[in-house]
Amino acid sequence: MPLDLRAIARGVIENNMGLGGLEVRVRGELADGTATFADTGQKVPVHGGPARSSEPWLWLEAKDYGKELADKATWVRQTRVPTLGP
Image (cartoon, rainbow, N blue to C red; front, top):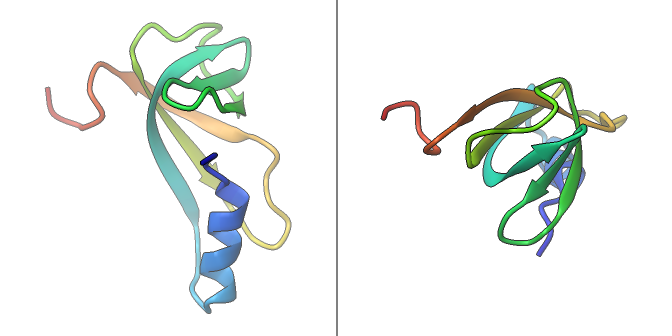
């Protein structure tokens, strides 16, 4: 099942909750402004970041989601593991 950041944001907002943004940590690859998720092959446009990722875990952020949602996720960082620690 594709990860639909817009649908998640809409669901949270429509249930009377505020939403400053979503952070996604996903195994995948960034190349030329597009993140490709490893397990599903889903592609998500990404603003910022390197030309190509060099680590297996991508951290992406979808900020300021509301009724008018952003067209791209924003690059946060890449790591060898999906957590803050080693």
